[in-house]
Image 1: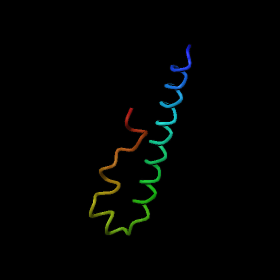
Image 2: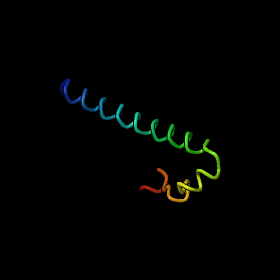
Image 3: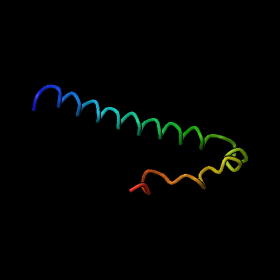
Image 4: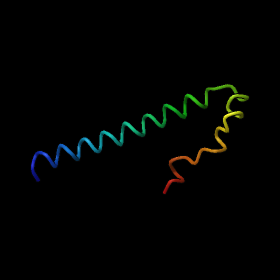
Length: 54
């Protein structure tokens, strides 16, 4: 395994962590909205969630 392969693997892992953190941040933001606004945008009715993706 050369240095470029290791670097690519680390970048991929960091990208996945960043994606998960952004999803959590977005969920937290949407959950803090008032109930009437959440209802208007369909939250959480239209959200599939990470657990259901697989």
